[in-house]
Length: 386
Ligand SMILES: *Cc1c(COP(=O)(O)O)cnc(C)c1O
Image (tube, rainbow, N blue to C red):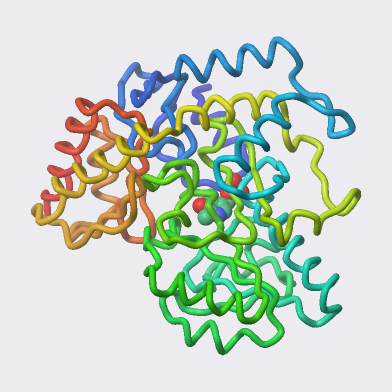
């Protein structure tokens, strides 16, 4: 049986997979079961920060896995403590809770926001405002938080207490403030179509939050960990959130979620109020320490330069309607159907993603200029083929 046949028979049918079996990779090059190579402009959806099997990253993982692979959160481990310290020092946040995914990082943020308000104001001030077109995860609660009607079917009843305002429309947020304890948003909506929030809107959110003691929750699951050219995307906006959630690229390919708290929220969750068996796993934390230690000024500048290169190549190119996003999180609105473009790129050895009707690029941050140029040439040809 081929991988595909076995998968189709035995793996739950929740994914529409492309007809490609990935078997190995190195950096931005992935190899399939026929030995065909692809330049990867997707990073496993912004997860493989330094591409596949990066030497330094593999070494960090190997070193830790040879010491201890897991303990439990009943005991202290060095990678977990060191990573939390590193995240706090790099962001100014005060404490971190570790989990295993983006949805869980958001669940923790939601629990913290509700408890903050319950402790201070009692019941009935528990609503969380999120934005239309957002994406916050696949658990029943984070689906509720997701501001897209298409996600609110099949699994009723959903968690109560979420209301959806419009991005870049502060009046629509103001209308919902009564009974609210927090506002949760992505600085750049990823799954929703790679749309960055306006700076004015984010600053107005901050002001509204200050006036009403609403917590600002920044979902940096996709935008975080240098993806947008800053360590976290909120840093582009000159605000400091009360809670920051991240995951995807944090551990460079291993499952790790983090929810960071500032001075307002650091002591809300106390012993027994939240937990995770795998959360803060020492191998995942060691991987994240290795990733974070490389996300320095030089790398951030490299991300910005590569993003500018991609935008300059594509803006005004035949078949390109518009370009959106920030750093190496890029959405391309095209005249040609994005599915056709993705298929043609794949045929020609380049992997790109979609976001709604756009083509989405999330390349490894350290992709070589040479392979980036090659891949963009192939992408441009596919886009222009209208
Ligand atoms: C991917 C994503 C999530 C969900 O992350 P999982 O690890 O799949 O649970 C949540 N929020 C945003 C913004 C995301 O991009």
